[in-house]
Image 1 (cartoon, rainbow, N blue to C red):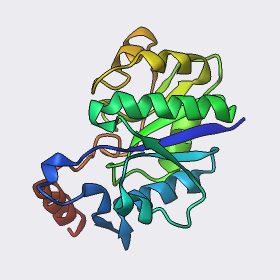
Image 2 (image 1 turned 45 degrees about the vertical axis):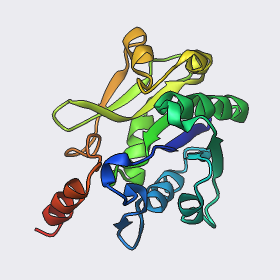
Image 3 (image 1 turned 90 degrees about the horizontal axis):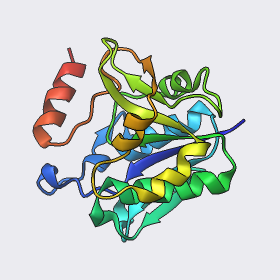
Length: 197
């Protein structure tokens, strides 16, 4: 049974001081395209990307990829706006679950998405990725039965309340892949420096 996978890319990247973190180069492509490719490569099911409106630069880097673009007209509200759109899309897709992943996580691979999905069932708990040492991070995989609850999410809290109510099964990914997100130019410089050693 297919799993829907949504990349959250409707944020403003305000801490980048004029640069767009999702367009930062990553292995020869913009980060957003790189991560979308990893999501498609995992082959779990349909892939969507949430996008603020208008956002021609982010849309352009997705050209040619077999995924759904989900416009989020109320993106300024925060992450909940993207989660509501993703949940509606996933419910309509008939998938048994929805994997949610922020689009600013450069270390995640297709294999990580596949690892998180292992053992997942429609009637089981959510799955949440952790670092190798057990710190909770992303992605998070929700069973389809919980998707109607996303309609009540507000602001920038994300799906934290759902995870407090429905304790997830924790799945360790290598290193800090489940935690690494790069929000500032300094974060990017430090991370790139660490990759070159």
